[in-house]
Image (cartoon, rainbow, N blue to C red):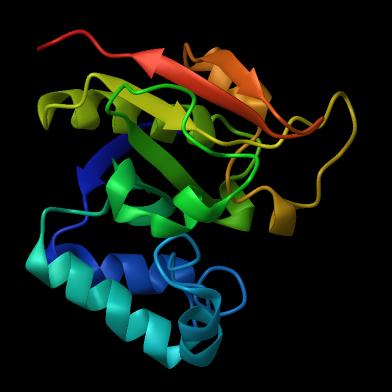
Length: 189
C-alpha cells in the first residue's frame, strides 16, 4: 500500500464522508468529542455533528488529514492547537503538562480493511509534518497504552501508545495507568 496524505479541504469533504460512512466513524461522533460540551455532543450525534464538522472544513484551516491508498480514503487524523479542543481542558488526566503552547492530535480513524498496515503511524507522522508547516512547535497525543493487551478498535480512536512511539513521540506525563500524554518537539521548517 502506498499512502498519500492530504488536508481535508472543502473539495475533499465527500472523501471524508465516504470514509466515516453513515455512522460518522464511531457512533455519530464526526470527530466532535473533544470540541463540544457533552450535552451538545450528545444532542448532535449523527447529523448534527456531521454538520458541525462540515462547517469546520468549509471555514478552514483544515481540521485534519486524510490518508489515501490510490484514490480511496482509508484514514483520518484530527489535530490543531490545543485551545480548539475545550474538552481537554476539563479532563483531569489530560491537563496541560506545562506552560508550552502545544498542538493536540486527538483522533485517528482507519477503515477496518486497512487496519494493522501502518496507516495510523503514517497519519501521525503526516500530522506532525503538517502541524510544523502551520507553525506548531510541540505536538501532543493522548493515546491508550494497552500494555500488551488487545484494545477493541472502538476504544482506540485516540491511537495506541505504540504507534506514537513508532512515530517518534515520547511520554511526558501519565496521570492514569493507561493514558500517557505523548509529545513530539517539531523543528521549524
